[in-house]
Each structure stands twice: as structure tokens, then as C-alpha cells.
Image (cartoon, rainbow, N blue to C red; front, side):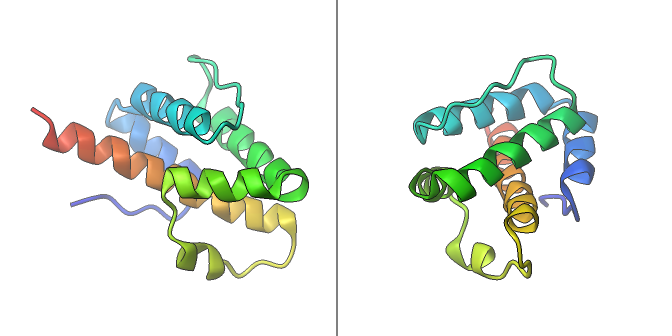
Length: 118
């Protein structure tokens, strides 16, 4: 069964424990590229830096490039109702929650591919 996490750092710690962090980075790069949203994710980025990088990028997209933000949500496949259920009032809090949803969805993709591919 897919593991549950309460926040981005907890999720990233779980990813590292399962030795799937490099695959998560690949999946993130792939989907950001597909959404045509440039992001710099070095292979040696720490989980804390990754969380910060994703948060900053999502915040920037919400504030400056909203259509690109919506496209990213579509490419990553984050359900609209999850975004609508975010209980936050400013762009910083919203971007933090969306970053968690994004990381969680990307982690699901990596986890399922790893678990069910032979």
C-alpha cells in the first residue's frame, strides 16, 4: 500500500529511505519539462533544498505565470478538488500546499512504477 505523509520533508525522507530519491528527481525534471516550465534541479540537491526549490517555483508560477502553473498541475496530474480544498489565504501558504501535492503525486508515480514494473 502506498505510504502516507503529512508534509513535504516527511515525504522526502521516506523517498530517501526507499532509495528512490534519484528517480523522484528524474520524474520531477521530466514533468516540469513536459509542462514547459524550466527548473534547475541538480542531481546532488538535498531534500530540503528540493522542497525549497519546488516551493519557490510554484510560488513564482502562481504570482507571475498563472497559465503555466495550471499547465504544470495538469501535466503532473494533481486533482482539481485537492487544490480547491487548500485552506490558505495567501500565495506563500497556497504554494507550500501545492508543492506538497506536487511532490506527493510525483512520488506516487515513482513508487507505483518501481513496485509494479518487473
